Length: 392
Image (cartoon, rainbow, N blue to C red):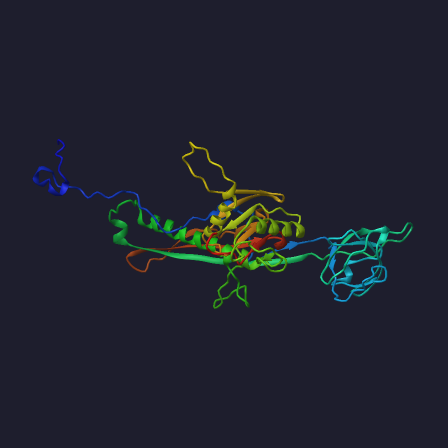
């Protein structure tokens, strides 16, 4: 048939009956991507119980803090100090107050009270204050002395709980039999859709999930749920402008800045031997992150592409990949060591389809999986909360 130049609605009898024109590609607009799960990858092993446990250890702390408000102005006479944890010290320890060059020698310990020699080795005396950090440089043992009392930190068992994720599939016999656009098998299509939804919910739970306050193992009447990253982080939770943490430096004082990120990375580095390699953000803070380098970009006269994206951040404390997930709280930036994170299925319970007995003229089934989060050494991770929500 020659080209008529007419629109199909006015072509009349010159055109044969038109076939329905429907693309065989079905578009999905709902967000279902799981960038954090993709970044972490598959777990190295499955969980073996609904209560998943792991063992953590740590070295003896080599710092403590002063716990007193009154001090003698003369360092030579102010030799009795009260600290938070006297058990962290030994006679013979050399101690340096943070921010000063003075070194003190511990000569006696009674509970949380230590007696010291001030200005040891001729070092300049420090101005002491409540909550000042004391670094234990090391212990100077006497020649010929016997072995000191053994000291150690007991290993601790940490735990999380598995959570069941499930969705039903139900397709009538008629729907399965008829020809549908873009779908070869309605049951298979519904399986895929439900799996996308469950994976989306799994990532959301890995970030924001919380276990019940009691009966965490669950029962026929208590739903078992896992703790997510946000619930498990305690040691390094920072808020701009509080606890010595800098503010954002903007009009409201809480916008994301490079100073905030670097301070968070530094504090985590001080707490652990791990290396933060992942910065997890929402779209709000990703925009703010990109704008950190706005003032340093340069463009030539012939440049016709404007790029405003930061996917990796390299600092003194390592290289971090910036991962954007929709499910991160809008005011938060998570600083994570991905080598200490695993999203684990319960043995034999990774996502799969289970056919169910039909009760009528339909195909019935269930997509089900059971997972938990293993977050080792929570002090090796951190989160900055309370940031501006406008991405600026």
